[in-house]
Length: 355
Figure (cartoon, rainbow, N blue to C red):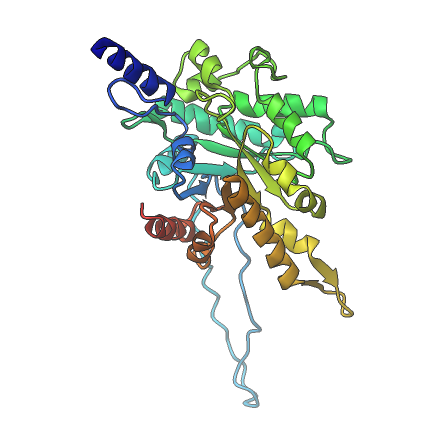
């Protein structure tokens, strides 16, 4: 009887996902355990090279003399204004060090590949190469030191990629080591299902092409380990890919309860900026005016749906509203910049979340 009790206890531990040593299973993607524990989490914008720009022009005025004296006035030659100091070049290695210096952020956000991978892919790959050289995984338990959440284009609207193009675009994002995908302008549950399916290998019942690029290196894994872990959580309890749906249209708001129930969805985000345009009209002076009451009602509808279906709820916060939105229930704070204001906002968020 004693042996049987021990066996039952061991099976129960395994079923619950607890190892025999009492340790909870861990994930490379830090989002997963934070979401599972329903703890507040906060992401920073991915550090990127500064945009180039020429030196500013000199501001000058008219040379003049003492008015009404009738005497010639000799104006001394102007002292040349020194050119502005050049903006220091930030290499991918510098940017990787910047990211690792700000581990208070739980992930890094980018929209560089939202419309097409062509522009953003080389920059992301260079950053990931630098992270791989520095060591992409660290800590105990082991975690990705710079997990990246990337926006992906809408899947079904006119002018956007058709589903077959979308599969290729998503594959290219995953192949540079992206560990979380934000589907933008999600209008229907069906388009979200298509997107989630495109993140999964055929061996898992999906449509992702077999190539993996340098993603295993960027995750610090062998190719076989990567193929096992590069799947959608929580559809696959061992998966490391976290799926977000951004709601930012009337149609998405109308279908939000169906969207929230799509298997594999972990986070619903309020696309507050785009929704501001959706709930705006042009006044008699030709200016766009937002209907703040309707806009806030839409945001609260998204929040209520998150709570109903127990999804993480995301909002593009700043240091002025992060505490208010967190207390409302937006436990996933998106900072779309990598600067002092964003760092202060994350510190506020972690404080109010008890982290």
